[in-house]
Amino acid sequence: MFNYLTNLIDRICDRSDQLHNGQTISWQALREAEQLANHAYIPLLYQYIEQEPDKERRRAAGFIITQLSRNTNDPEVIRFLLDRLRTEQDQDIVTAIQQDLERGLGIPGYINLEPLFNNTLSANNNIRRSALLTLRGTHNPVVEDHALQLLKRTVNEFDVYYIALLLNKVGTRKSIPALRRLLEYPRQDVKSLAFATIADIEKEKEAMFYTRCLLRGQFKFEAMEAIYKYADENAVQAVTARITELLSKRRSNARMTIETVKNGFTDLMLGMEFLFRFRTAKAEVKKTFAWITEKRADYLLPQEREWIQQHLLAASY
Image 1 (cartoon, rainbow, N blue to C red):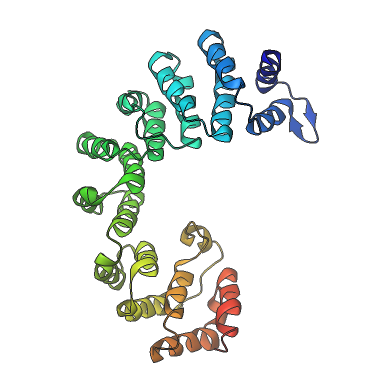
Image 2 (image 1 turned 45 degrees about the vertical axis):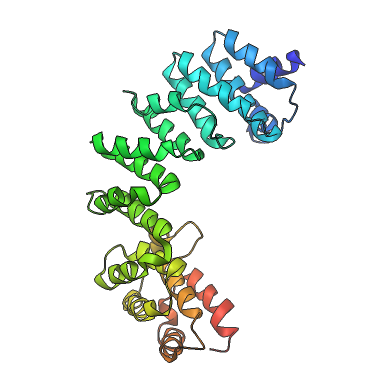
């Protein structure tokens, strides 16, 4: 059993260019490690990691043990890896451990997060930011408090972005004042994250705020997404106006990269999805869809034309 693990680590660390069907030995070994589910390997890897002097081999063993944790649903591996953050001296390995933790199981609330909290204060950019990303996998309420304290003292704009990412995952109404201040932050990605987080916390309660932002041309994409998720028919006029603006001129396919949200929708598609809910109750909605299909069909991006085919034409618009 131990021989198999050391052989697997050898292959993960193999840096030769030997290929098999276009895949390196290391690539194949990593894919093999991802499938492991033998819980008996875990204590052997604990011992190996604690005793192995070579950092690349420790890194490989850490990757394997993270996969085993996920495949066997064993959260105690998380405790071991967090303890390793206290003792590991190599900064690259510390970053790698945190990256593995980020991709692994969620961190249970009973596990001490102090090593991650300490690393969010590291002088090393990679350690600091990978710790913030790892904390997104927790449900411990103290994480939000820690993030808000960091935000008060942080001046590095990239760190502010990573803190905003963390609040996007763990933020509650406690974070709303700080998030509203971030709406004025110079970086657009920080402002967009803050807006989206506010919407996901406040939900329907702030529907009028999302609508006002859309009408004023502020946070256009984020406001459209928030309306799509949380607004009612009172937002129909604002959405109609935005769709009219979007289709006032032709757009290139390259715009898809800019306008794509995680579900693959452009903001025009989000707007049409929202209006589609009211297609039988609102005359202006039917009129807007008729205008899109009859006057602006050539202005639609390919994904939007497909949406029209699947929704409007099927509904005999």
